[in-house]
Each structure stands twice: as structure tokens, then as C-alpha cells.
Amino acid sequence: MTLNNRRFALRWLRKLFDWLEERLHAEEIKLRQEIQGIQMDAIAPGHVNGREKTVMPAKGSSGEPPAGSRRRKHVTASAFDLRFSSHES
Image (cartoon, rainbow, N blue to C red; front, side, top):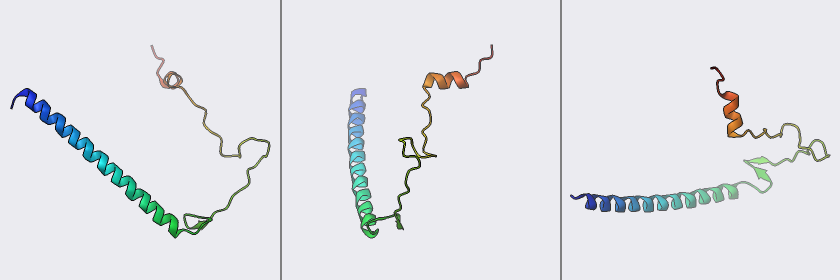
């Protein structure tokens, strides 16, 4: 088999594999949606995971987030590198 024939065959095999992978992914999504629809029909409205949904009021009505829901401070990659790199010379 010549080099050009091998390249051609590999290119078509990759295309076939990509097509099959896309079809499989589409079917997985359909199945996941069907399963989710069945599960949602089985649970009564107003219930989450089989339990009654309760809403807790937020602590502090001044616009600040409730306690325990604070977000982490975003650290840039360069700041992370500086923090954890060794400064030994």
C-alpha cells in the first residue's frame, strides 16, 4: 500500500469514527432526556428528589448574600504560580 493510499484510508476511517461518535452522542442525549422526563413525571410537582421542596429565607435583607454562600476570590494563574513556586536560589 502506498503512502497516499494509507493517508486516504486513515482520513476516511477518522471521518467514519467521528460520524459514529456524533451519532452515539446524539442517542445518549436523547436517552438522557427520556430518562429525565420519566423521572420528572414520577415526582409530584413541588417536590425535589422525592422530598417536599422548602425555601429558606435569606439571612440579611440588605443585599448581602446569605452566610455560607460566599464565593471564593478568583486567583489568576500568575498569582497562583507566584504563590506556590519555590523562591529558593
